[in-house]
Length: 290
Ligand SMILES: [Zn+2]
Ligand SMILES: [Zn+2]
Image (tube, rainbow, N blue to C red):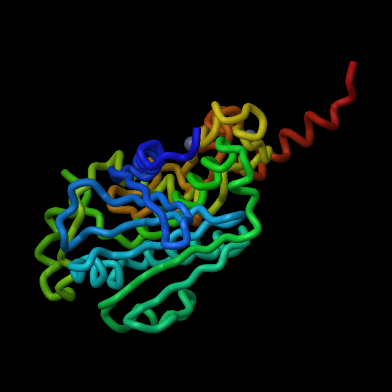
């Protein structure tokens, strides 16, 4: 089965908590692409994520819709956590061998340059390019894994900057403060708590990867496709010790743990730390056998 846009949309929707629809097509030179678009967003807030499946390479292009001025301004006025999450994800992409190209208001910009947040964003595109990939070499399942991995990284980066309004939270009461912010900052994409948690999870996995932070197990490597994406995300700062309004930073507050390590972590309150768990494993390995 070759990678198809519907299952990609399903997978990225499940990973990010934002519902996408998928289409496919070909570049002029015949190279195939899969494209995602958020389902049911108005024209002023829509965008596309196109994953071009080249020979031994993937190029993912984020483009706001033609009438998405509001969306771009809102992304350019994302809060501190959103900005640092966006940067952490782009850095993780570069660490994984990709090139990231950010074009802002007509010019190429370095995402690490803090100046980019000073002027309103009026035009924007982001490309994540990964060459030297074992892709399009006949193993459709492996191809799909790579496509999902890189598309979800790109989606997580974009979502980090989207202004989310959490339903039924205290954020609604804070609405009067929104007056006075730039036009774009007033748009809010309504999500529920579950969806926001999915977004944080997607960001954490894009930043930290899919291997357990304690024992380094990658579930998909051990069990194959059936276990792809089966990794748990643990709050390093226990949720119960932080206040209601606390904004989770996926780079520093969340880590991936395999189901085993995650269970052991929570056998104590407060949970055992990564260092403590690693020490337990070392201690056990050092026990003489028999
Ligand atoms: Zn583990
Ligand atoms: Zn946990």
